Image 1 (tube, one colour):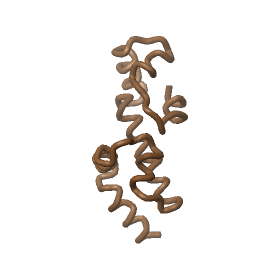
Image 2 (tube, helix red, strand yellow):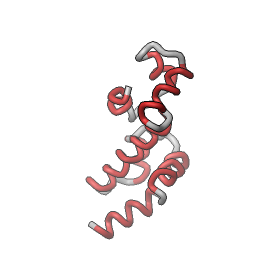
Image 3 (tube, helix red, strand yellow):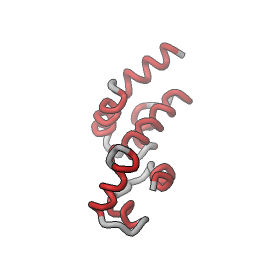
Image 4 (cartoon, helix red, strand yellow):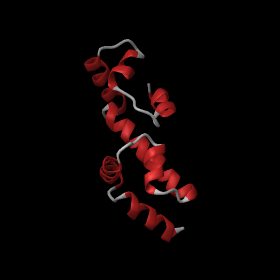
Length: 102
């Protein structure tokens, strides 16, 4: 399941789609996933996407909107809020601070 998320993170992934991989019900899948990883499937996916976006900022100075689109977010506001939730700063601040340190 983790490998599937890591391979397909740049497109829409639904809980029912993930649950169907091991042939589990949605609720059972979510419970097992959280027991195994310590986070919900959505938290895992979003954290993975945010880390990939941070990698894009560090690797080539990618624009915020481009990083959002490349990591599966189709809404810039949602990307910014999600990035801030996990990185404790906005993508623009993260990018600026990385450029400053680099």
